[in-house]
Length: 106
Image (tube, rainbow, N blue to C red; front, side, top):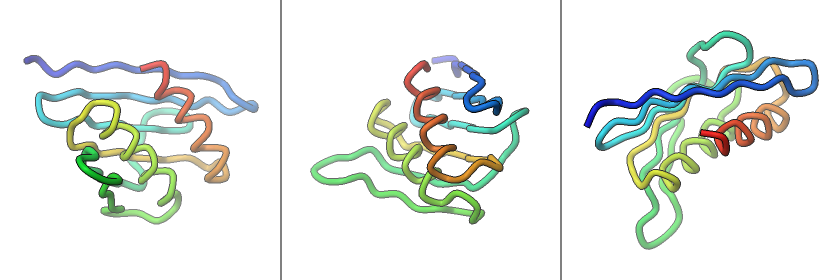
């Protein structure tokens, strides 16, 4: 399997949000940014098996809930280990809504 790179962007509330997704054979990596792609708070999640997803913030602190939520969504959607990076100056709730919308397009 060749890695597949996908992306989407949208202007929401006067801010430009982008999402890039790299799908590997055993994992998926999502980079969610306001403006140009940048690394931010990084979270990892395992796909749900018999119960809820297991996730953790690995580094960063600006949007920990958003990065964990997006990592969990990626893990559930693809059934693979997921990493999600979130970099945004927007409030966490606004950023999560925008990035979740973009994730739905990928």
